[in-house]
Image 1: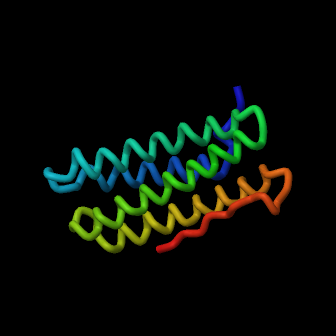
Image 2: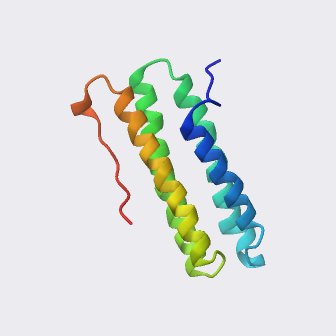
Length: 129
């Protein structure tokens, strides 16, 4: 079983999950079980993907998991923004959470670059918003 607790991206992602969970309990009732649940489920699945990526048998499989995590992170960012627009998360909390996702994104891009045999084959994702 591959160790993943020591990975910085795991630590940052878990901190993000904790903060996110603290925020979603304050969502309006209409959104707590839709947007809030989607956010928490996505963040938990994201952490599971870290384990899977770290346990991958080869670099291609690992890179695929990392790319999937980058896509999921964008999904999380969209729901975070929607939650802010609908006044379920304050602007200050939104900025803090998106700052955390940007840090995680940098970690994932570094891991993707490191995991690739040929750096020219690596497609690095950048936050678009």
